[in-house]
Length: 366
Image (cartoon, rainbow, N blue to C red; front, side, top):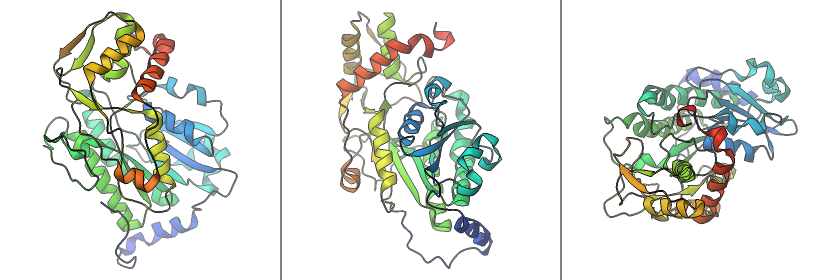
């Protein structure tokens, strides 16, 4: 799906004139030393790494409500003068200029140049608890952030997901971006799966109506440091259980396969997508290397010297086999390729979990 404008700008609702006038007044490029960027869900797993990367050349406003994220993910950033954390919910309108702590970013004058929208609950074990929040984040929250981007004339990134393609195809072929997918939107997962599709539709609509520069990254299964522990994300749980000598739990059977992309490669893909002069349409960001999770568990036990066993339990609604990405388009358009091997990524994840497990482990897991 190519989101580039094909119709004229004169065929619009007159009620949009004021919005576009305000858009015209806001600078699309920074008028001070650094651009201002907003990262929603910035205290989350991927979001915190993205904040780190953006701080190299930007002032970063991190917005999060800690529903499924952790303050420890961004604690090392709080003393950076170019970083500011705002505790807020995207499901309520956000007026950045009203926050006194953002005065040093000159938001009233400079505005915001880029919005990275990653805020959406992701908790496999507590999926039912966050179903309504997930629905709202993909609809109300999405609308609020798009409106904010229109007001500032900001470039907008939407963290979409491989779930928009539906179930892994029987023939196992990798998903291309021009495949539309198919799944039952009335299942318990629908609030997330269909929600991500609706969010992409919202991006396309705001592009067509307002001329908003939107970029969509369809992110496949990601792993690395800072993933929540004991929450059903199998890779960090594998590491924690191996360290503690407990059984490593696979929510499925021995045939459960997945692709796994290291978090720094995902962030690099996002940055390359946003740096393109024109919107290329949605891009897959993931690994096309397919591996059995039982083999991943074995690698982790080997790395930790664990004598644990692998056991299988009923699948979690939020944890299922997903298809592989076709990476042709992102490689051709951005030159991006995954750089971190599975061996390297697991080593980094194990080292991080060993070092910080007592801090990151939730109270119920002690």
